[in-house]
Amino acid sequence: MEKWIEYSNEVQVAKESGAPIVALESTIISHGMPYPQNVKTAKEVEAILRDNGVVPATIAIIDGKIKIGLSEEELELLAKSEEVLKVSRRDLPYVLASKKMGATTVAATMICAQMAGISVFVTGGIGGVHRQAETTMDISADLEELARTNVAVVCAGAKSILDLGLTLEYLETKGVPVIGYQTKTLPAFYTRNSSFEVDYSLHSTEEVANFMQTKWELGLQGGLVIANPIPEEYSMGEEIHTVVEQALREAEEQGIQGKSVTPFLLGRVKELTKGQSLESNIALIKNNAKVGAMIAKQYQHLVN
Figure 1: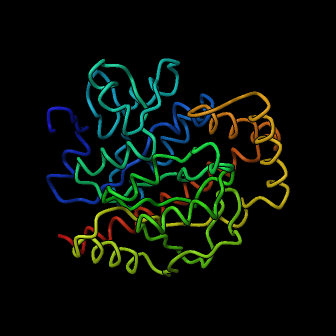
Figure 2 (figure 1 turned 45 degrees about the vertical axis):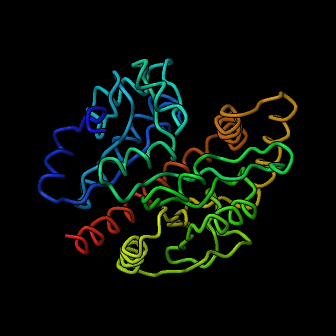
C-alpha cells in the first residue's frame, strides 16, 4: 500500500513527530468552485488549520500516486486543469493505474486518510441519499464509506439538495453516529438547523475526541459525522429551500444524472442566489476547519 502513497514534506515531518494532521478533500477545488476562488479558498483553509496548530493534508491523485499534502503548484494544477477526474472508492484503482489526475470525494478522501493514519477529515458537507432515491437508487458512496472507514468527518451536515431524513435513516442502519457539535438538530449545509435531530449533541471538542477514541477502542469499525452548523451570519433563510427545489426541477428536466447532479445543483443554486450560496459555502468550510483542528489536537493528545 505504501508504494502508492506520497507524503508532502510537511505531512511527513508531522507524522514522524506525532503532530496532529487534518485531511482535506480535493473535489472542492476541482469540481466545487470556480477558479480562482477554488484555490484561494483551499489555501485559506490550509492556513486556518496551521494557525490552529495542526498540519493540513489536502489529498489528490497525481502521476500515479496518492498525494497526502499538496504543494502550492499542485493546488494550482488541480484548480486550473479541466482533465481532473472525480474519484470515489470505485475509481481509485483506475486513476492510479492509468496515472490520470484525480480529485478525491469525501469517500475517497476517507480511504486515503485512513491509509495515511489520519483520523480527522474536514469538508463542507457529506453526500447522502438523493431525493426520489426510492426509485433512482441514487445514494452517495460517502455513506457506505462512513460505515466502514475509521475517520471522523467534520462537516456542516449533509448538502440541503439531499433527502436529509433518508440520509439519517441510512446512517442509522449502518451504525454511523451523527454528532451535533453544539447543536441538537442536523445542520442543513446552508442553514444552521433542520427538522431532524442528531443522535448525540456534544458541547466540547474534548467530548468529541473521547467519543472517537471509545468507538475505535471498542473495535467498532466506521466513521463518525461531526455536524457543525454554519456561522449564524452566513446562514441562509427559508428562500434557500425554494431555490433548491427549482434547481432540482431543472436537473430533472435536463436529464442530469449520476456524478453530474451535485456539481450542477450547487452551480445552479449559486446562480439563483447571486453568489450568496458560494459565500456561505466558503464560510462553513472555514468554520469546520477551526473545529476540526481542535478535535484533531484533542484526539492526538488522547492517543499519544
